[in-house]
Image 1 (tube, rainbow, N blue to C red):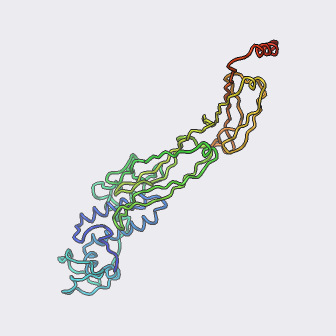
Image 2 (image 1 turned 120 degrees about the horizontal axis):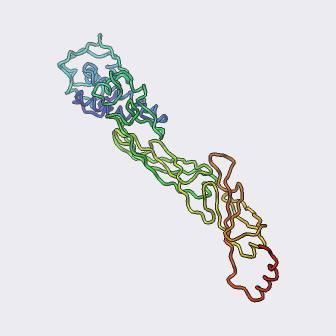
Length: 360
């Protein structure tokens, strides 16, 4: 059946030169390889060449006439019959083709002299965007100016267009949608040990060359939380937002948020725990038994007298330091000494006897 160039450009068979140029510009801004991330570039290159070939054929009166009358195969092979009274009623490309718009005033190309020479896709791009009053900002005088620094990579890893000064989107080209941020709640245990989280997202995909429609697809994103990451850390997935015509999809950003913990609080790279002890324990000592965030039992002997409001530091038992693998912050234990609500006369007498000679 052959290739349907009209369908590729999404134009009808009465399309004028201006219609063709507008359709080409719209699709080229979406599928130019330099405007797509590396993982999508092979698909973009194929579609960009397809768009360019369609425009090359339909914008050239001689090529378009042969294509309309005899189809793609005849156009590319140069094998087609001489014009006849019946030639305008058929198309080698299939029964859905018709030729009411054929340029009959043009002299019908002769198969013996016609040779199909497709134009270079990048030359077409440079011509269209470089010769219509700066429609693409691709430079003056045609050529391949976009290769010379007009395209730059954004912070999110996706290419975006910049004019010669690098100051922002060039006129007529798709802007990049604003980034979309989502909170990513993590437990303190997850931030201590690290974890991989899988997030299901739904996004709209615009199929410019295929069906020309918007469809919703679901995708699983894997987010690797590294040990020691802090609240506010951002993980960016370049251009994973919804697709729209002439708009570069938004970056999808997940922002780490920290869930409250029943025992520990985080203070930078340190962990802080509040521990209540009795006055007797503060004076005579005890052994604390704490469960760490990675599930270990941490035995901490209290041998010194603990004063009200006192704090004990346990080195290297805090949060992992993400920029210094193997190192951790401190565990800080803040003590709340619980005093007895009342003492009997006998207890007071005993305390005076025991503590009477103690120097403070």
